[in-house]
Every structure is written in C-alpha cells, then in structure tokens.
Length: 261
Image (cartoon, rainbow, N blue to C red; front, side, top):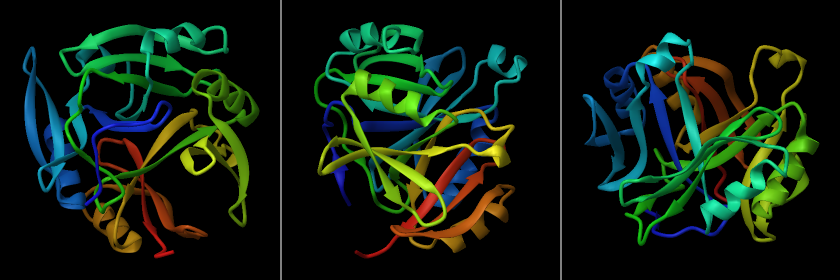
C-alpha cells in the first residue's frame, strides 16, 4: 500500500469533504471505500474525521458551517496542493490573475493553508506542511489517485497554474475529448484538466477528486444503491475506466480503475 510522508512543490497532497450531513456522508464512504474514521474535535461540536485505510490517512470529512448551509453552498470535495512556502505562493496569486479567498493561516501544528479562486472560478487550497506529515495512502482502492480541473477557460488556467506552481502542460489523446495533463516535471504529473462544454452549462468550474477502485462498474452500482447518483456512467479511457458520481448530500467525485500497464 503506497504511503506518502512528503510531497514535491506543486503536488496534490490531500482531499477533504465539506458536507451538510457528516454522519450520513461517513456511512456512505465507509460502504463505498471501506473507510474507518478517527474523529478530531475542532470546537463548537464540530469534528474533522480522518478517513483511514488500514491505519493510514486517506482523506477527511467535516461538517459545513451553519452560514455556508444557509447560503446554499453545496457540499464539495476540496483539493489541496503542496507548496514549499505558502506565503511566497500567496503573493503570486493576484498578479497571476487569481483571488486570495483566505490569507495563509496556521492549522494547529500540522501546517499552513490558504484558499484561492483561480482566474476561471475554481476553488483550490494551498498547503504547507510543518515538519513530517503522518503517512497517507494513495493510488490504492479507496484512496485518492488523481485530481482534475474542470473549467471553461483552459488557456487561462494553464497560465495561472504555470505562474503559481511552475506546472507545465501538454495535450493527451483521450479519444473523444481533449485533455490536458499538468506536470511538475516531465516524469511527474500533477493532475489533469478538461474543458466544460455546452452540456455542462450549469456546472461551475471546480477541481474533481478521483479515488482508485478495483471495479469501476461495481463501485458505481454500489454508490447508486446507497442513495448516491451517477453523473457520468462508467466510461473507458486509455488509462482505464472511470465514472463521476455524487454522494447523497450532492458532493461530486470520481472513481477510476486503471489498466495494469
């Protein structure tokens, strides 16, 4: 089971779920991925529940604040990107065309984070670790395996993340649609990008979190049978087979089974 304890600058390093019903969400993902949870109190009766696979952290779930719910902000999966110096990175956001939603702040003794809008309207978090992080599982069934920007202006997004994180990008043939891969180095992809088309007129730009699964079709059926919804049915792509789903509270995520090669 691959375990990560450190990340390169510009690498997606974490994903968490902000949801209106944490208890129901925890039950859903436990059924889907086999997660167990370690609940960490945040105050005011709120908990940050670390999702675990065989004792390793795989993600987290926490309850949305009352103000968010009253404003109609939908439950969502959040992508975090590691940076070496979060204050230096934050200083680049506005000149590069983005918006700094939350200035860098300390998260207990774990690290520092900032929340940003990219120029196309997608929200993403930046994270800087303090010291050694707890081992995190990746690229195994039930763990995060890919992060993908869904946006209407791929050129603006590519420029922004290039200036902010040093990513470079190139197009890859996915058959029926154009796809961009972001790279930290030539051999180290950071994530992907797809253009939202006319069929997605009501979808806001966002970062989509993919979780690895052994059987995409079986996981999709399991989600649908437990009050989840199928947004995009299981579909073959060169790396394997994926589906886009939403949980019972409406948070959208993706699952993917990859080819052996």
